[in-house]
Image (cartoon, rainbow, N blue to C red; front, side):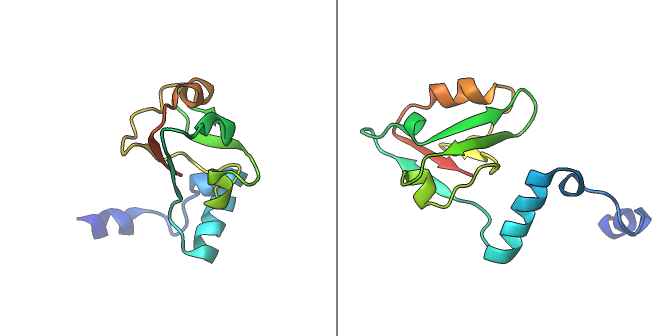
Length: 113
């Protein structure tokens, strides 16, 4: 059935990556590095809010808006435009504004971008 569905599609459908420069950059980075994600763990004594900023949300992808050089996210090679995939293994936060989500991060916390 999957083959039938795929065969019914036109040869080249436009994907979100074709339209969004950040998606194109992320796709290219995945292709070049082979990395699928970056995991950053913050202990109880860490302050994730001082390490990076988030934007988006409210039904859109939550993305990294800024990364502080030398911080844990920077050392894990998190980049501006990367998508936040999970917080402590959960990914049910997309309806929240990125700024509010960022402010609510309480260590210890594990983030996957």
